[in-house]
Amino acid sequence: MGIEEAKKIIMETFANTARRLGQSELIGYIYGALFLSDRPLSLSEIAEVTGYSVSHVSSAMKVLEGVGLVQRIKKPGDRKAYFVAMKNFGEWRSSTFYENILRDIEETRDNLLRALNEITEDTEEAQKIKEKIQMALKRNEVAKRLLLTIMKFKSEKEILETLERCLKKG
Image (tube, rainbow, N blue to C red; front, top):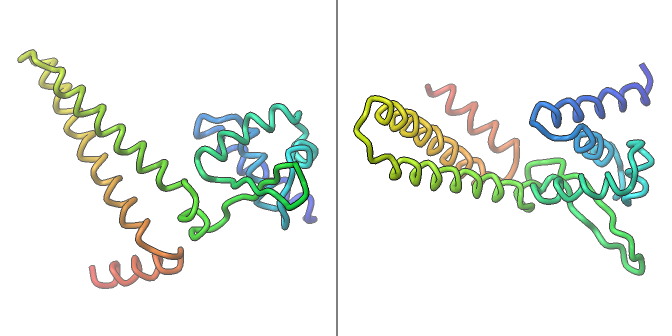
């Protein structure tokens, strides 16, 4: 297998992941192109690599920037925007990636509590819905605690070493 075939497999993997997460495959292709690149890429370069139009790439890039998976870079004396992929834990920590997830977790919690407070009936159906909301609130709290714990670490290596120590103790 050649390098180009390996790159194609990686790009397809990211595209499939994006699809599974309910996003356009283009988001995965863009992330794959940036992940494989040794340098920042412009929108037109990304369009060339992915085979999509610059306007489609620009729209998808806003999603990737919004979740913190890519970062926009300006080069001195160049009006173009360039982009790099956040490739490791340290880069993700310095981006908005985890803050966005935390914000979603907290917003979900607030909405679940609001829904719970809206239920004033004392019927069997109301009780079932309350139980489901309570279960979702517990999962939400676990997700928040896990994320806050992960955010305390400085590297993937530190996370794995800590988990391995905990598993050996357990």
